[in-house]
Image 1: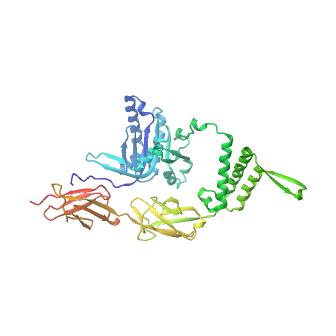
Image 2 (image 1 turned 135 degrees about the vertical axis):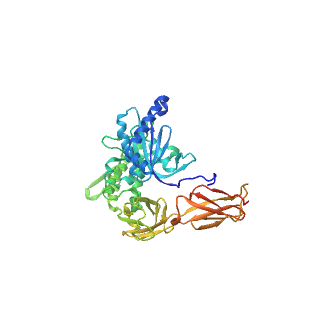
Image 3 (image 1 turned 90 degrees about the vertical axis):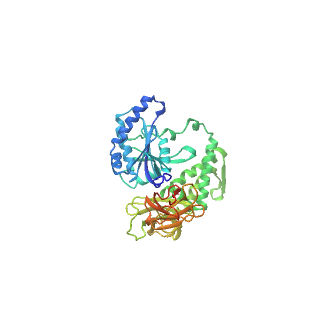
Length: 465
């Protein structure tokens, strides 16, 4: 193989466990070394680590004050590993460790020394999730939590924390994973309100904000009731929300404006006065009862291969997306290729909506697909994603070779005047590593091992003697 062609593992979905030692940089050098050795020993002793390592599906990447472990079989692997580490840390109080878990795109580049380094959005997000925690925390992203919630035994251990702002203003939705004796159930310091945010706010501003909020939502109810679905105001919660909204309006009128309304009626024989706060409360609560809450219907999408509905190419892998007028929803694909959407707003019944699959190595068989939703099940075919190879053919002096024939898996192309070429490989012929043959008149034929969807290739052909 040419020394100018680098072997690179194809971008794929990895289940990442990122961990580091808290306040590592403040320790003495000998303390740092001892903590690293202890951590390495604990991690290697876990069953999840050993199983994945023995199966060849684990990528290990040290980070100086910790490490990143990339598993590939299930999002349960990094979580189980984290719980095993947490259990072992009970015997090592001198080792404050925090951990973060996320599933996302990762790539590993292997150099000539067989040293592996890991990069990609999956690694970056796992580190950001971890950065939000303190010693003992096992934090997981919302994406991982949604996958784990499909299994009943994980639900009691998942505790939603809401969003946390991390590097570059990115907001990450976090879930705290802990059991009765493992993990850290305390709220992370980064999610606690700062002292500066606890300043006294004048009563009038609180009342005004409450009033505007109440009137805004009331206006939404009166103008477009179905929009409440996007806010989650459905079922009994719809009516529960009406009560505090009425109080918000009353607080403003009574506490700030000191308003009142007067009604004269002959049937009472005198003037009847109703305070403005009471009128606002009655209008808000009573008017809300007139507006019926929007209804929803469930939708189940079954994902299958091109052979037919029984061709379950995706099991517990990938997600199905639907776009409901800008409200993009997604659900994980289950064991039988199903993705269940429990609450589609009723106004979309009978309409065609964009729907697609996001899964490693697969794509929707129909581009820009739209399907009619009416409460029945949908069947969505997928196909393997095509691959791409591109690069430049040159002679030993670096001059471009025009008209060189390049072929891989039966797909053929020729280099242009500048020596550039591009090959599109159908998904059914795609492999992680493939043989590329280059033939040109007056030059020796060469065959190279190449990785699709990797960097640009440089093909150097020596001249014939």
